[in-house]
Image (cartoon, rainbow, N blue to C red):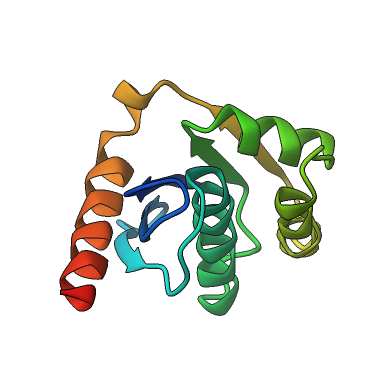
Length: 137
């Protein structure tokens, strides 16, 4: 089973953003990604991008055969992906590519978790945001 934790950090709303991703799985698989986002966006958009980037990453690594448990501290992301619906058109645009990858996975779950249980991804997202802010300086 693969476990994916995602988070985003944004300065301003919208503003510079970064995403953090922690992936753990079988055979001592453990990956940490801190990725500055190129475009300014809202924190909610960055949260959707964090999930999409994580899914694209496991797709490239040929890990879609695993059962995947996704954890996010964004209720909007968890609920929108679960229902495959978002009221906000900007958020809805992320659902198609997210579900395109999720549909390739035999079994996947997305779960909302409190921020306190997502500290690894949060730390990486903050690192990515700091990298983005240094680029602009």
